[in-house]
Structures are given as structure tokens and as C-alpha cells.
Length: 622
Image (cartoon, rainbow, N blue to C red; front, side, top):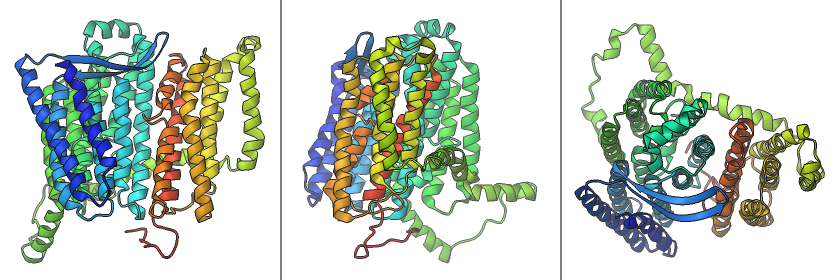
């Protein structure tokens, strides 16, 4: 049976590739490919689960393909099937079939019809790979696909200001979760001395043997898992991104933020449960986080005027309860709860346009205010305070700006002296000098050599922070991101033996896609004039090929799973020792912030309202 597992992944990938070659005007062909794939996938899932249950529900695991191997390091794709996979796969297949069937009529004659179905099929490929993944590396591939497709679907109405702005905001919050996953993979490599699979994690003796002498490592991994799961499932303090993500079309809101993508954090908790099962302080933290989130999200949902926002916060509250269930070890109950919440929220979001119409009519003819509520029994000061806080969504957005965005912006603004000329005159010669030193590492004093890796990684982090806050020159921001990768690779080469072919494997994808992106920016500047980053330019409508090329270049430079740089990033972390937390944090922050900077360049240059007056000019509040 395990030989059939790759089919679950290959079927949506094949449908996605086929949809790329269908012309945008062929709505019927596009929708048929999508819902035929979804129907076949649902049928295959039901038949497979039936046979699997009939054979006693065995745990299946298959090591599919080794992508890279060097010494004791191995990066491989691993597929895994158990009860958790069965539930997530069935719910995903059923809802994908329902949403694709709904979307073929809902989006009829929409300008981005082809783009929508391409993205939905790509999303579903990532979702299936995530739920069927047998190790963290494979899960992270699907995790990244979910992140970028989320950005594309929120920004579906790409000529409007608010959808594009919210898409960048949501993607930026997602990158915090990526830090958690990256550092979890890094520390797991050192804890288990291998690319550990979920099948081996389910062996209690193996996990307890490694954790007994590394209790701090176990707590660190659990905290990183908590951060990643909280971000992906919109738990506090990251809850505010979910209502902002509802700017996309209603079908994408239903399948992404009501049902499937928002429950991936719960999947991560279930998969890594054996690591933190006996860390009771961590379990208490998971449960308390879910409880506080459920309480606050419930009161926020009660006072929102937008129906999508009400559903979003209601879903957040239910996921908080699922966190509590997982922390208590009630995994079966958590799976039932996930399935029920996913189906309910999808139904609510799909009928939300009709509900709005009915409610408006009811307000005119049959509305009667409630004479008494439960809050009326509370002291008025508490009642009014809770109402005001809930109306402002507990200032969660302001907190994100204050503690997440503003520190980065503050540091980046202190680097305003770093213009294109200074970057060329200072950092390129400095890099060449540092690179030449790498050939004479044995002659460098030990007390100096010990700090060079941290110094070089810090320089790379400063460069990418400047790229993130750059407001004038898109070319400068792009070049600074490329220089960041060079400095990080150099830092790791000073930290531990870094073979030349590993160095080239990592930088190969960066250099190629970086050159393509540089060409696109120069070409855009030649065709349209100034392409500064202080506003949206909206050139995707006039130059769709350039926009698509730039998106692929951004994904390649950011280490998306289409280039060798994705595996290269994992190779880099395999050369960071377990006691070098500062170096690991700086390297992970560099990768995360450069992804935000790159998506911001793409969004500012090619998305949003068009700068020229002959195009439609939506207002900022549209």
C-alpha cells in the first residue's frame, strides 16, 4: 500500500502543470481540470482509506527520493500515512472538490480566472505534501508552498491597494513561523544526529533516550514548534493576520482561512507530539495559549460588523480549543474537532454573500434588538472596556507593528547612509578581502577565528535589514539581498568545513535567479521609468510576463522549493553547531527577512493601483 502514497502528491501536481498550458479564456477547460482532479483525489482517498482500515490501519512510511547527500547529512523526501494523515487528507480532498465546483461559477468571467485555478491547484499540491510528509524537511516544502499561494490568493485583486497590502502583511507574519520551523529542523539534526522521520519520533524509547541528556534542547525545540504552530493557526499574539487575509475571493477564504491552511499548526503539534509529550511545562503553555486565544477571539467575534471577520475570529477560537485538546493528549478528539470546524467554516464562508443579503433585508423589515444579554450582568466598566478592546481587536495589529515591524525599521533606517555607491565601495571590497581570508583559515589565530562567523553573519543581517527598509531604490534593495546570501555562506565556511560543491550548490540558485531578477528590474525601469519602493506601481497588468518572471526570481532568491538554494539553506544549518544559537538565529533571521524584502519588491513594482492616470485608480480604502 505504501507504494501508492506518491500518487496522492503527483495527481494535484500534474493537474497544476496541465492548467498552466490552458489559455485564460478557456474557463470550461480550466475548471474541468480542477474539479476532475479534486474528484479523482477524493475518490482515491476514500478507496485508499477503506482498504487501509480493512488491513488494520497500519502506519505506512516510504523514503521516496534522496535530493542531496554528503557524508552524514542527507536531505530526502519521506511520505507517511497514519490516522492523522487520513483525516487531514479526506477533509482536504472533500473541501477542495466542493470549493473548485463552487468557484467555476462564482468566478465566471473574472479577469484572474486562470490565475485563481492555477494557484488553487498549486496550493492543494502543497497541502497534500504537508499532510503526507514523513519528516520536517518534506513538511517544510509544503509549508512554504502554502505560504506563497496564500500571498497570491490574498492579492488576487492585484489592482487594488488593500488586498496587496494585506497580502504582504500576512506573508510577513508567516515568515515568523518559518523561523520556528527552520530552527526546529536545525536543532533536531543535532539532537538525533540524522534527518529524523515522524515514524522514528513515534518510538518513545528513541525520543526519551536523546532528551534525557539534552533537556534544554528539548525545551528549545518545543518553543520553536509553539511559535510556528501559533503563527500558522493564527493564535495569540498573531491572530490579527487571519481577518486581513479575507481580502481574497470568497472561495479562497473558505478553503484557506476557514478550513485547511489555518489548521496546519494543529497538524504540526500532532506530528511533533512525542518530542514535547513529557515536557509538562510546555504542555501547560500550549493549553494556556489556546485558552487565552479562545476567550479573546470569542469576544472579538461578537462585536465585528464584517461577516468574514466574525467567521475568522470564531475559527481562531475553535482552534484555540483544539490546542487545549492536543496539550491534554486528546489527539482523536482534536481530529474530530478539526474536521467539524473545517466543514462548518467552509460552509459559512461560501454562503456569506447570501447571508449578507438576507441580513440587510431582515434589518429593514424584521429586526428587533435583543433586550438583555449576558454582559448586562457585569459591572459596566468591565463591560465597556471589553467592548472597546474587542472593537479594536485588542490592538493586536498595533502590537505587531510595535514589537515586530518597528524594531526592524528602526535598525534599517539607521543604515540610510548605505546607498548604492557606498555598498559598492565598502561591502564588495570587504567581501573580497574576507573571501580571500577563507583560503588561509589555518593561519588565523584561534581566538579571532572563533568570532569571524558571527561577525560575517551579522554583516549579512545588517544588509538584509537595509534591503527590507529601503524606500527609494528597488535595484539597491535587490543587490543587498544578494549580498546577504554571500555573507551568510562565507560566515558558515568560517564556522565549519564547508565543501566547495556545497557552497556552489547553495549559491548556484541564488546567482541564477538573482541575475534574472536584476534583469527584470532594469528592464522595468527602462520601460516605465522610476520604480521606487515608496508606492505601488501596478505594472503586472501591462507587463504580465515580466511580473511572472520577477515572481519566480523572488522565489528562487528566497530559497523557495524550486531551486537548489532551498536545500542549500538546510545544508548551511547542518554546519552550525548546537551551542551556536546566536549564529543560527542570525542566519535564520537573514533568510526570513530577505524573503519579506523580496516579496515587497515584487508587490511594490508589479502589484497595486497603477501609477499612470489612464489606468483605473482605486482608492486606498477600496
